[in-house]
Amino acid sequence: FVGVGGGNDFQWCFSQVKGAIDEDVAEADIISTVEFNYSGELLATGDKGGRVVIFQREQESKNRPHSRGEYNVYSTFQSHEPEFDYLKSLEIEEKINKIRWLPQQNAAHSLLSTNGKSRNVPRNCTEY
Image (cartoon, rainbow, N blue to C red; front, side, top):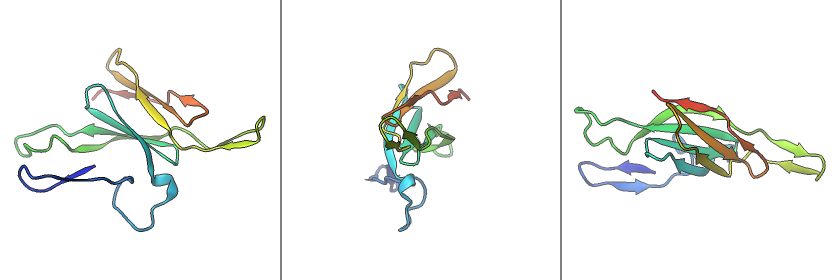
């Protein structure tokens, strides 16, 4: 979602890809799931290519008092790779189906991601 406009007038536009909108969007770049952490400070997106991108909410400043809705890239990593289940003769795609943030126990933020067949606890996002 992107907020566009001046002052208090915002128009929200939905885009299912990260970055600039091109006509040639790779299938792997299409976002398949989105999940905010408990405080709303972090936003994790998973895509069909098995990548997780974590965005952090921009802090409001005196120079930019209306920047509360903006998120910037905080961390990116490959969570799942394509696999083959030899017992069932099935290819397991890397697409991220679900992301869940774990309750915060210390300064680190942790999340789980799944592609439907396997779950990963891929990274801890240490607090800034």
